[in-house]
Image (cartoon, rainbow over all chains, first blue to last red; front, side, top):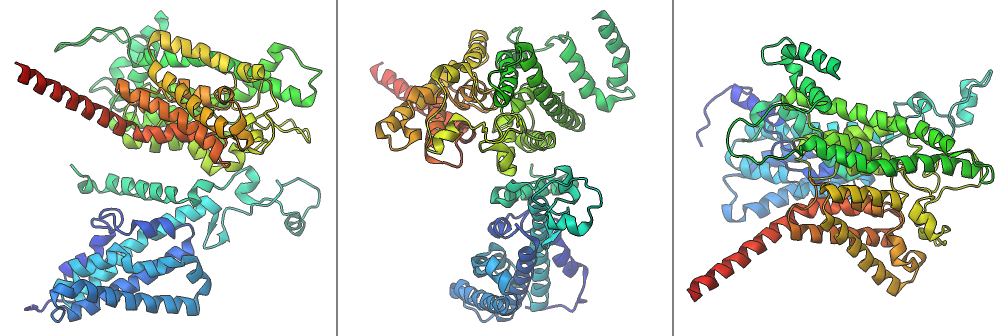
Length: 238
Length: 385
């Protein structure tokens, strides 16, 4: 492998970062990693944690495999890759359990299932095995960011429309037991005591329960794909 | 009439090719052909002459819905005053008026939201506005609870038209019945407004009076609580369109007489429902299973679904044999979902949506079987010759 000297952020390398964000997005174009996009996008917090975890695993495994690429016999390369990915996932799992136990519980098996995330194995097979560590690192960041971006976008809409919250904060107002009543001298504390609805809920707004079910994640991803192809015409299949 | 024609003709050049508002041409034409029979003729090629076009088919279905619609509005008023004081029932027109006051806003919202989206897509894509929504827009309010907040109706309609229809390419391309997509969306999104024992009659604010549907009370293990005549005539709680089997049968007669709907689907579904009902009657371990099979066909949305939803020519199976299979399984599954799944006392919606998905597969195998049979016949003929 004769690696020519080229600047760290040459045009080719920058494309490694930017391509997966739009033209070659792992979720909306390659349709990989759909399971986790359905399962953990009910709320923003787990989605963000998941995005970071995948970012770490993809980058680290890409770099590791890329460093070892000339030593791995090609007949057993899948097993070696799996071992590397599995060790990294265990590290992520342990860190989450130690420092973010509640999120770890919410994500439950889906942290372990990063091992089987097609994006991870796909990048190792398609890219890290044939490229140097720096390029593999950039490719990892790009793909994980493309994945995480869609994940967070879906989770944003699902949490906002499904439970009226963002990161657990009630952004659309509080949904109380009672509709507000106009009483003379009723101050905020009294309204809270009576558990009255505020904000949009006071106008009769209701959360959309369908948003919390996984079919709606699929439809949300579908709408994102629709919007992306509307803007980016070259993605439309003939 | 002449005045309308003249006005339309006056403004037509503005919307024609090269005109000032060329972009809005499809919307203008859609409006024009809705008011007047289009006068263009086929210019090339062989074609079959037929007076029926999509608009006339759709208007026939809307006409078939009218008996159920009027009775449904009356029933809304009847159920309301029945809660207040059954012995002090106002006159028929008053009941009808009360129902109309409740129901017509839903129709208006449904049409405004749905048609706005249809026109917007037609203008953007540059194709003609299709008439499919005339029926869907009428069906949607007929299968929703009467007290559903209008904004929820609007959101459901928007979802059904955009995701259920336009995403697949518009009228004639949808896999699922758009009206049922709207209902399914509302059902899963706003469950407290779409199911339970409070939503099926207008809330009169009377304590202790519930408007539980027959299926609801059976699922809870109680008896039906209404006579068979009530079920047939439709003096029962439920969504506006579905209660009166008699009025639905009048509509069905019109649809069958004009040949708009398929009798195979209707008969197939009735047989399917009856078969499943008989099987459950034979097992009979709970109130829903014990409910006589022929009464199963009278209550809930079964009749309405069979006549107006399952027969939707776009989402149903296309082949004659396929229609039998498609209809049969709708009936079978509807009763099965009712009995087995307590969370969905109304299985008709799920059954039709599920079979909509399978309709192309059924057609595929019916056609493949036909090809195989004819191939065999050809081979035999060749051997004989």
